[in-house]
Amino acid sequence: MKLTSTFTSLALGAGLALTSAPALADDHEIVIGMATAQSGWMQAYDKPAREAALIRIQEINDAGGLMGKQIRVVEADTKTDRAEGAKAGLEVLDGGAEMVVVSCDYDFGAPAALAAQAAGKISFFLCAESIKAGIPGVGPDSFSASVLAAVQGATMAEWAYNKKEARSFYVLLDTWIEYNKGICDGFDWMAPRLDGAEVVGRDSFVNDDASVAAQITRIKSLPEEPDAIMLCSVMPGAPSVIKQIRAAGINSMILNGSGVDGSYWLDSVPGLSNFYVPVQGSVHGDDPDPAVEAFNVKYEEMFGARPATQYTYPGYVLIDVWAKAVERAGTTETKAVVAELEKMDNEPTLFGPRTFTSDLHHQNSARYHIVEVNDGTPAVVDSWTISEPVPMEALLK
Image (tube, rainbow, N blue to C red; front, side):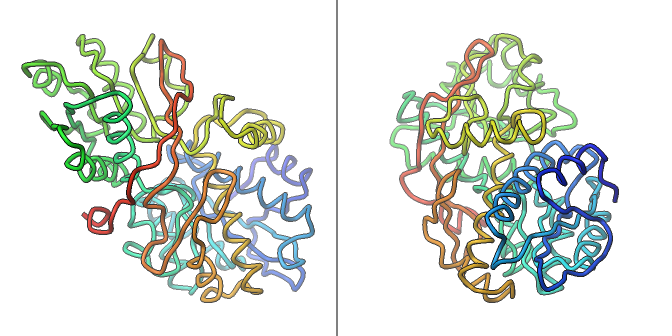
């Protein structure tokens, strides 16, 4: 693994120590390992969340450290490859990591998380939103700092029903990764709870073959255009599907999960309107909490650009909650820190409260801001918290 010289100078200038050599921690420091994608397509998700984590580490170090010790980061590149992910996990553990930060996606972060679990160390997924990124898929010492994909699907269903009077829905599932399935699982759990709501059709496609001509034909053959299309997809295929839907003359509201937050892709669908996503915080300068925009400014000062998507934010949150648990436990020992994490009930963080239990190391309910894209411009238009948490039986579907 090799850090770029540009980032190394930025990090050192900020008072951070980042290394790739397997040097064990001394008595005056605590080591965090980051086994994340610094190359390959997962880099687009991992890099900003990793950088947000570095900001929180810097803040802790500048304030005197964690239990009076400075945090040092050791890193290894997973290269968006599962086999390399396992190697990266072992590498940072060999470097003395007391906690291992792994890739945003369950499928690509699990190999490193499993290495941490086997070594008796805590792992935190940067922003994974499948319940498998935790106890069911990795083990009792694994957590995620983000909010379950199912909560996103449930949020969009309930919000569209209540605030946009959507009653007919068409479900379009991208079967590529677990995250997409989770969005639709949450929608499917919520929809029957909405009196008068009806799923008028459902279809699927695969992200790397995002031609949906047949699916569009079936939508257009409906007696009436659906009020909303629940699209459960991510980059890079999602924009192509959205463009095809609009090019076919379908003007239904399109709902999606947080995986398509950001404005960086909107030029590929010129003039897009009536499109909605849920976000933990806004990258567009209009978050209702001024502290979030202050973070965006700080991020730009440190890394040269504003956050591109809301997936930056969970990296900050994971360091925040883990550090609080360590301080309360008075140790980095895994069982003691896990016990403190599992006591957190609506623990305040910059990007919304976090709750962990002995059964769930994820968030099954959350406050989301709703971002609308209107004529190609995204903006926060509302906030919504689902009326009840998504239950375990729906999450484990």
